[in-house]
Image (cartoon, rainbow, N blue to C red; front, side, top):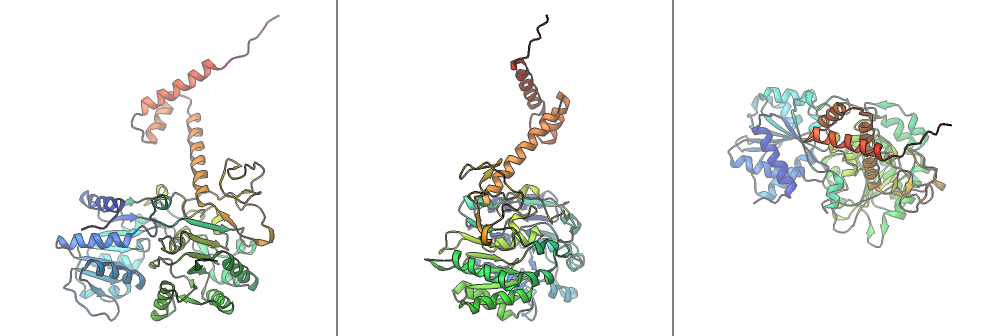
Length: 485
């Protein structure tokens, strides 16, 4: 019996339709916490019922262990192709570590379907070498951000179709994801001068700047004020530039009397597992990470995110914010303390902005690392971000609104941002752009061509309607009468 939500069932139906239509490698794009692993486990159950062999391929142990828990919950037997786990190639399902599979190319059986988690990484030579050796079986990619740091489009990896799920804001409205409270401020000017590495900033210089005692002290003060209330201390994940800055932040929290640890890709398996169990069981107040937990970590107990890392990568920003979007029983919302000013970056914006319509198999790297997001605008009087066309919907203020970084904050205090205000601003901007294009069409054929471009069902009817409205307006407009002497 399926335990999927209706939109998840619809996504799996579209996956089957894509394969039936002849596509060999579709991608299911869904926001973090939508339930991609849960849906993948159901898809695996249905495929093995059809006597097919399925692989779940990933590059992180957290991704494989999370999937193993899902399969255990459904009673699905599976084998491992990972490190020193016992080899049992007779089972129809395998959880596969990319690194281990590359080392065992000559002994691996050929699967009928490979599910690749975080498939935006699958363009790499290691993935392509594995797929070529297996004869290019059918592939289903899973990701929340189908963009890469090097700017290469997903089509280069052999992917040929996109299946788009719902936007994050729709899932929040449906009660599937946690509401967001976002606090931010203009970034440190020193961060604007950092060197870049790929589509992001250099972690060494960024870690040096963000590890200054005054910056760490400021973030601690804000965290104490906002993340501690009558319900207790919110379990927090902190994202830092590098290992040194993560360790410095965790030490600062320990010096203040809180339970905190730092983990990174160099940490042992036991340390990484202990950090997850500490947040889940209430044994830790904060875990500081460096280039970790951007994927593969499913901890619903996380109720606060702390950003000491400034990023230019849309993929990093959305994946990191997604770590706290899962519903937590104890906490009514997700608190995001953005001490790096990421939300004010016009290339990143609100984590709840609508982005599904921007994804494409042919999308390469843009100037800010991905599809542009609407700027987060803040009222200079009440600091509300519910601002439309220069007017604050909270207090009615109509004075100057500074873009894109907002007003200068007094005493460096964070102010709360309404993540939905960016969505409203985006809708208004798109509406104005559409009207501008319509006004630029001077003839009926131009209007028809525009309607065809926008894929209207009746382009000719729409074009006649717009032309008739123009003529009616002209007839109703009074004209000045010339009186001759």
